[in-house]
Image (cartoon, rainbow, N blue to C red):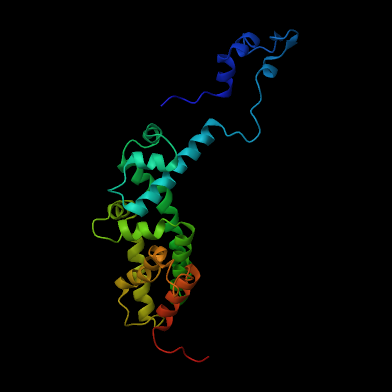
Length: 259
């Protein structure tokens, strides 16, 4: 891919710029301008327009757009069925631009795990860290964070269901390789400890708590587009899903207890 010329290179390569600034740029000596008179080298070089992004800023923006497009397509049609060329077109770029930033799909997946999934995962671990002695608060806040993450990032829920918890999902192994199971073991140990201390229902199976939680949050969010024409569910959003999940987890299906 051709290098984007800098502003200085543009001036030097233009006919007018050559006539106006043909000089030793390390010197402050005046030089002849095309229209006569004298001016400095600095004055001959046009200033960058306000708000115009630098080459580095444009590169970061383009790369981010490609990552966003990849997540949207992966969530919509799956990783296996998505080519790098399709991602480029979704982002409004040529395949050559995609190849400039990501040579292979494997490289792209590694970047997505590191830059998009890692921050989300770190945020989801906060409730257990901040509430070591309050099981209900920790699980309630985790539920709310899951729903908020899926609401702020529409690709999160369908991509998680399709590529992480489904059989044959391509992201599962990469996420495990990147994060391991240390965090999961610590969370399960906390649940078991809460049960022994009487802070959590002893009848719960610790290994199923998070599976249940994701089923109550990510699955409804991943399928919410199917409800658009359903008069009973089309107005259900993230807030309602989070409230329902917390009520079911904390109070079960029995009648609510009077205060």
